[in-house]
Figure (cartoon, rainbow, N blue to C red):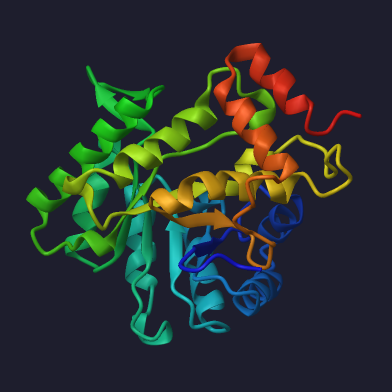
Length: 293
């Protein structure tokens, strides 16, 4: 089953996965090409290109990876690096003629590294903005409330329009960020859900795309739920059930995974709702009820 309109940035070319890290460390371009083919076949919308710290230590490898991937798929790519220098080199290497004219994603622009946004004037691209942090008193500060995330999103989009009047709202993706529920004592999952709803209902941000790195949600949790079904994918689907109707339309995730909108009576969805309504340690105990016999 799939969710209509949900766009997936295939996440597997990323050192966060042990098998992918081994390919990156070995400079195994053929192996990375196979990951690209597999994600393409499973329905990805974009493919992320993330080689971790190697992007700055060996920028030519990042460029080689882009060229190798573009040789085997016509999907557009998401260039994932916080370095403006790396982004500039990678965007220059990206060939739109090999992606059916579809633009790459520059991932990610934040208030604290706004200089990266100027690259869009050199190479047309979709921009992924990080609303999970703001720049205040000369430093980046993590946003802890939906109101802070919403306000940051407003500033990012307003500044983008002011700096580059050619940008369309369809070229803008706002990432509200989520982390592992297994260690969430600060209600960050609740904040993400509320952030999507606030941004999605703001007429000044109408049309902006909303994104999360969905796989982060279920890290460190067991595979099986207490009702005998799968836990991780259903937990991710529970998050989607609570956010897609309000504007979330893009995820960094695994193509081919059975993402779906869950019925109200679903055991994991009910537990997800109880968990994000609880505070601190009570939230962790509520989550535990989903997998503990």
